[in-house]
Image (cartoon, rainbow, N blue to C red):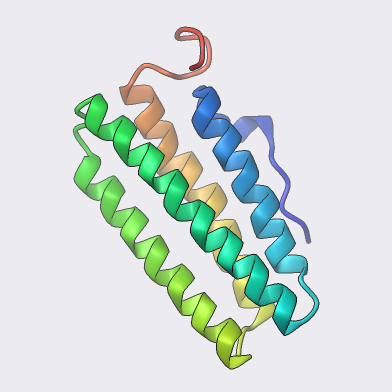
Length: 133
């Protein structure tokens, strides 16, 4: 089972959508890694890029005075904590591949569809609202 981007996940903000697409690639690489060294490298790449991406989303929320910034930021913190736990499982060689795929799917699709679409709507960046930035 691979992770693949679907146009339905687009929130209409070109920068954020491109970052989401990159997260899908990194998640797919991680889920397909065959050995501990590869999983360690993929986990680090995903963790690092996630922090960068969340920083961009949080900056957008601050710039637009997003009313649900606290809930959205708390969701980011929760996801970072989960990624930290996954990294520990990789280090301890206790990672369950099925649980990893379930977590990554829920995170990527669930977070984008629920939280990021709401953010995009609030800042007027939904598809067709005005040109994506």
